[in-house]
Amino acid sequence: MEELADRNVGVDVDDDDVPTLSSQALAALQEFLREQNQSPADQSEVSLVTEDWRLSQFWYDRETAETVANEVLALCSGSPSRVACIACPTLYAYLKRIDPSVSVQLLEFDKRFEQYGSDFTFYDYNKPEELPTEMKHSYQVIVADPPYLSGECLEKVAQTISFLSHSNAYLHLLTGEVQKDRAAELLGLHPCIFWPRHSSKLGNEFRLFTNYDPGTRLGGWEQEK
Image (cartoon, rainbow, N blue to C red; front, top):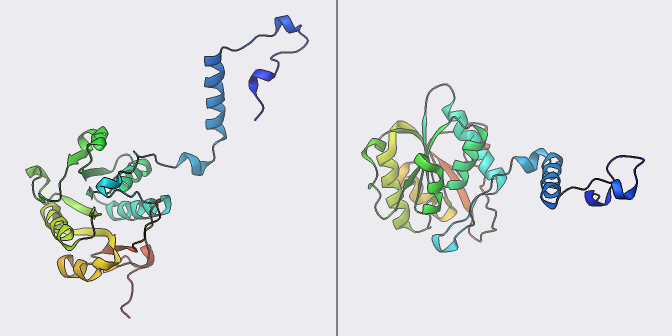
């Protein structure tokens, strides 16, 4: 884009009469024009705080976040539903971007997400049921992304899922391929054909597991070989 400061404003005027913008006004105008020139894809991006590797934080890429968010919203359509996001702030942010009216609670250890106000609940997987009593058996859709790939972490997150789950709740688990058998044993989950990805390229293969057959969505359940 041409520099606005180099362009004359008006016509047939002497150089001494050319009006000029203050630096603050010029900066504001340039920012406005940048926003107007953004593509729809740019405007739909969601910004999060920086990943903290010490907390094993790895945010989903846009396709993954939108795919899972749209699946969650499809499950919520037709009846009032409450959604719990366990250690997956990317999903929370995309759910709220796509449908601000959705009832969703983020359970997260990182207190930087207190910025979400009453939608934030502090969560330590080492204390799986130390949560407000009003959250017990109150969620129709639960999405969990355990911070670590250990069996112990998954077992404790499974306790939290049991604590939160309303009867016949829909469950989504995003975790490593190595947890496939454990996910089936603890929660009766099956892997979907859709493979989640992260913005930071990880060496571990991640999977999305559900306790219901999504049909054609998420690629459906992976068939046993």
